[in-house]
Each structure stands twice: as C-alpha cells, then as structure tokens.
Length: 176
Image (cartoon, rainbow, N blue to C red; front, side, top):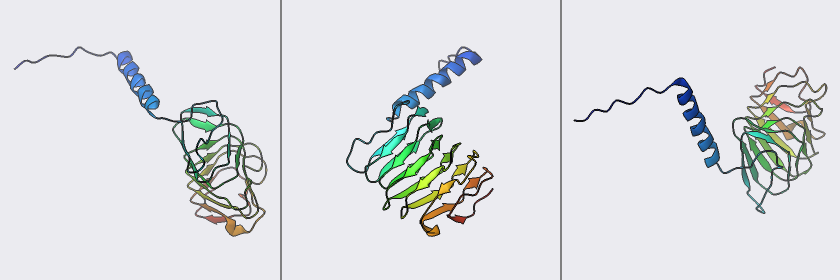
C-alpha cells in the first residue's frame, strides 16, 4: 500500500481555490449578463436567471415570463410589466410599473429597496401577489399604488420596515 502525503495548503491558496470554484459555478449558470436590460427572446414562457451584479431594468412584454435572481443580483433601473410574470428572489432598486389591466404578477421572496414612491404602481384591474417579500427603504409615501379594489393586490408573509403604509392591499401576516 502506497501512502502519499499531500503538501500543506496555505490559507491564501485555499481562498483562491474557493474563488475559482465560485466563478466556475457562476459561469456555468446560463443567465442574463450584468449591466444590460433584461430581454425576452421567445414569444411566450421566457425564463431569465439574473447573474450577480446590477441589471439595467426591463420591459416585460411577453406572457408568462419568469425572472429568477441569484445572490448579489439587483435590478437598478425601472421595470415595466405589460403581461403576466413571476419574479423570484429579485432585489429591486427602482420602481415597478404594472401597466396591463389583465396581468397577474407574482413576486416571491423579493426585496424592494426603492427610494421613490410608489414602489409598485398597479394598473386598475391587474392582480398582484407578493409572498415573502421585504420592503426596506422609506420612499416617503405609499409603497403600493393600487387604484383598484383591495382584493386585487395580496401581500402575504412580507416584512415592511419602511415606516409607511403598504397601500390599498389585502394584508396577511405582514410584519412591520
């Protein structure tokens, strides 16, 4: 039996190896590159994974688009939503406008860190569901602008640390 002893690895070498593995993992994820607007190449059912970094907003115009944020990804420009869509683990740094009266939009585990009001502007008749989201910045006014009925927008299991009212919405298990 041959026993081979491995040489000691310094803390610096261990850290460099961890960084290389992390970069290889990120490179293996096919997703939206940073500093560009989010695009929808297909006519329906687009799925976009946001890589770590800042992304330059979006205009969601195709039905059933799904946007997934990875650790460290942020959307730093306005987002306009014209069709039904789903956002998961996305960190928003600018306003969101839902313009379609027939859209259903879901935000799951998202963070809204916006300093302008309203943070989310909902068209009359659109349906919006926010589940497990966090509102972290005080924009100095209403967070969700909903001119429709209170049951059009549901906020469930979210955290609102802005000090402002969320707006004309149905609240369930929301902490402040």
